[in-house]
Length: 360
Image (cartoon, rainbow, N blue to C red; front, side, top):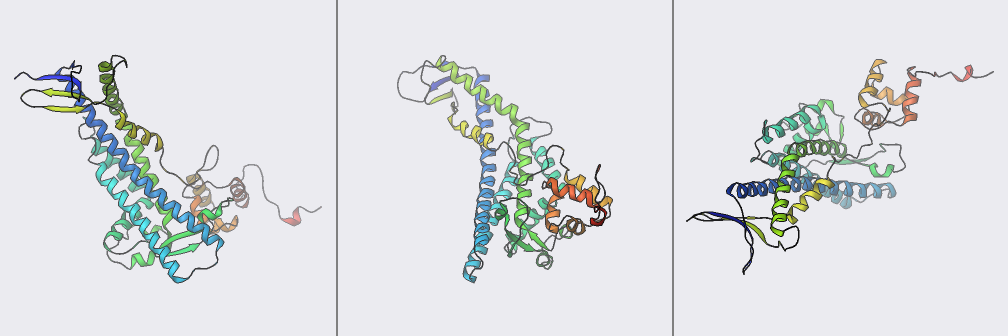
């Protein structure tokens, strides 16, 4: 039996057939597979983002309550601890699923290096560059096999903004408790404070995964766009410029073996919207912009004076942990930065005078 290829709506009745070549049929089949991979790719990342948003909303609500209420009964504290552990377990589970499954995406694409190799290179770079990423990976494994991640809370202002209450509550774990467990990978714990802020760790972890996702999307964008255009061209061809209905349109292979490929784009619109929604990595840390000092520059200025982070914080009257945030990427207020330059005699045009020197 001669094999035939054509476009036709999947419905009963005498409907139009639009002939296809074997090459055109195979191209539509490949395009459908690429778009399907792209949708899975975006939906998997969206699951991670939604878990991250859920965690942030929950802790923000708790921060507001602790800003207004002075105490809790133990049963309520236990409930808060349980809910916090649930959110962190969900987040780390979604991250694990994303990291494991993204390596298997887009196998049909002939890329050099392969998509899987690109994933491995990007994730490895983030792992090597970020202590937060390394810590969260170790914590996920610890949580899966040993114990819950959240062990306590503390109240602390970490910014000078009017919305301090957002970060009023710190959800924490203690380094010494992790060190005491022989199963925990302690290689990178010496770089962390005694009380570890899990919210700050999670924010950076998700941001790093987000950077990887955006980079990977760019790698396949040309192939995905080409696949979408190919499907749209087939629909346009069948509909004669939009004059005829294309509901239920399929590409058929009929002969000794039969295959059917759905030809429509409504389902792919979900992927397009998700890609637009998640166009940038989640980043809740106000970062330097314009001529403001970068974290690296601030660290360089501090080390040039031989100061510890604690001493630098004392000079500008902020908490040591806040200075740590500045050197981790948080934007330092201009007034605080200027005071630091003046206190360390590094300001390019001004210097401080003692009070008696200012008197006539």
